[in-house]
Amino acid sequence: MARLVDERFDTYLERIRDLCRMPSVSATGQGIREVADRVAALVEEAGGSAELVETPGHPVVLGELAGPAGAPRLVKYGMYDVQPAEEPDWSSPPFAAEARDLPGVGPAVVGRGVANSKGSLAAFFCALEVLRDTGGVPVGIAFMMEGEEELGSPNLPEVVRARRDDLAGDAGVDLDLYGAPGGAAADLAMGCKGLLSFELVCEGGDWGGPRAPLHSSEMAWIHSPVWELVRALDSLVGPDQHVAVPGLLEATRRPTEQDRALLEELAEGFDPEAHLAEAEASGFRLAGTTADLLEALIFQPTVNVDGLEAGYTGPGGMTIIPHRARAVLDVRLVPDLEPDRAAEAVREHLDAVGLEHVELRMLDSYPWGKADPGSAVARAMRASYEAVGVRVLPYPMAPWCAPFYVFDRILGIPWVTGGVGHSGGAHAPDEFASVEGLRQHIVAAAEFLLAFAEIGAAEPTEAVRA
Image (tube, rainbow, N blue to C red; front, top):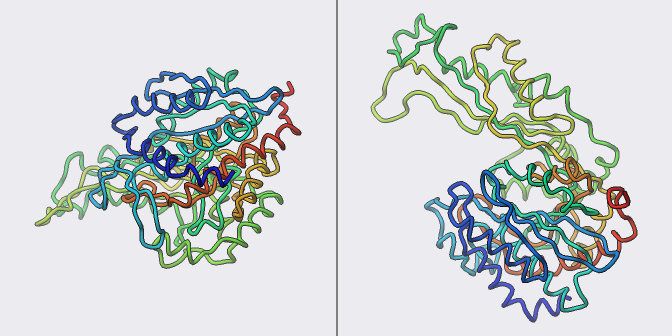
């Protein structure tokens, strides 16, 4: 397997670069239709069939690749959209997908979407070709690949519900470049946090405060909406920035014994100092062992301020009481904290501390997702890491969010997300994937499909048996 990938790798690397050279910016729509068509063509070139399912936003690519009789069937998630690339700090054009040496990384492909996640998407189809030419793809695959992940996947759930029969399978999977620098270890996640994004707005009105900007001398006897918003924000966390909203804490589930076993395994291979260096931070705000830190990262809800706007901050000074202040926040959701309940909890808290006049408006949300670490698909992913000599770093839940809840909440199947190969800079200038990581990813993706063919055939899901 690895030898054939090595022989063809120059060709495969160009295929990966070709897809990443095509812009597909979901926020603006740039190139979306062209890349959706190209992704559908990749399924067809692999021997399958594909269609574009229209939505109120960008199309979802659904596809089908038949497997051998009696083989298990995977539902393969993918995303073909990327973030905008308008930052001025790119050292090469963001859609050139240039291959060059990066300090501390070595040979790498640099470009928007290479890490997140068109590089791994293109690599998966390279792995399918390797399998076709060495005995055949051993499983059936249903593809669902969306063009709105960077927008919060607003239309994917309805497509999955409407096409549930077409997406029936034994397990769901997402493959990405989760490898650590150097490629000796890689993350594997059996869940992911959810997300509630909302804004708090305070405007002058009947409660007090001006309805238009007012000379700051009036601060002596008229309320400031900005200070009221600051009060509201300060009330959401304690002095140590721990969550101080009772309803957010009361709704959360404690880690199970199985979760704790995974945390201990993860802690053995996790380097806190390396993470701080990557985050360009000088320290953690929490004390405790590595396992304690990871438990907080994964199983504690958070309240974060994404941005603030109010008043005048330009040159020369303008002494006013602003009539309006706004903050955008996010809450990371853990089991069993649902988006609507989280919003209610914040609202109840603000009312309880006398800030009824601060308005809360929900923006976007993702439910959390949780999968079985002992499932056949999770064990097959572990086996693929072992096949290429990569250490597993198992996350009972990833601290970020993705729409994998469609697997367990809509399709009712176990799932896992993982994959080897080092990448970095997602959502930032000079996003990259290491060349060696892409090669490693192709081999491991093929090994995963082989492992799942064996393990999954022995353990069909209840949905398939029914």
